[in-house]
Amino acid sequence: MWLFATYAFRLRSVRLLFIGDIVGEPGRRAIRQIVPRLRRQLGLDLVIANGENSAGGSGITVNTASEIFSGGVDVITSGDHVWDQREVTTLMENEPRFLRPLNYPPGTVGRGSTVVHFADRPPIAVINVQGRAFMAALENPFLCLEAEVTRLRETTPLIFVDVHAEATSEKIALARMVDGRVSAVVGTHTHVQTADEQIFPGGTAYLTDAGFTGPHESVLGRRIEPIIKRFLTNMPQRFDVASDRVKLQGVWMDLDASTGLAQSIQRISEPLPAEEA
Image (cartoon, rainbow, N blue to C red):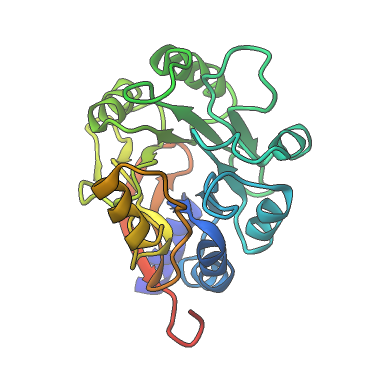
């Protein structure tokens, strides 16, 4: 009886995993090793990952994006480091599953949202938007997100939003603004997984920061010593990607397939097994 009830529940719901910022080769390795298993174990319908730091810890390339997609990720989002690799424009022009922040000026190459279609369930829209507090002054993310949510709700009630921002208040305010009109809002950029996962009164799932996927014996994925030296001396340093204690961090959630509203949300922090690290 319990098995039947669980199966019936899954027919009415969509299960989504969002993966926090992938940092360098260790982060890509975690994707390859862990995501296929999570897809099987959790019965995931869609996997989204922020990949803006996946190429050597800064930016993304055609090859690193291909590696992430082949590891089981369906959509890649980004943020303020999206332009760090010159060839990213080729990726933007040719890969509809790759997003840059929505709130760049009209005419900027690439796209800030996409809709993933399925044969047996409603489509899922994904939006990537960047904050402005302590970051580059892009178009107003509140106005841009409001307009894009309104547009996409004509197609589907299932809408996921990656808010790539520095300020916690900005992330929360954006999420509160669209509560009840999107399925989930999850923050990226600060690389520290927060413990405030919740479902707002209107039914939108929220987490301030998904954390990061990569080496956690580090300072936000970079080798520790150069970071400390930079703070001590204020002199330029080479911030290489670290290598140890690799984890995949993110959040998975169940969404009502008909209303688009969240039914559950749960953080994940999955270590790469020692023999694979």
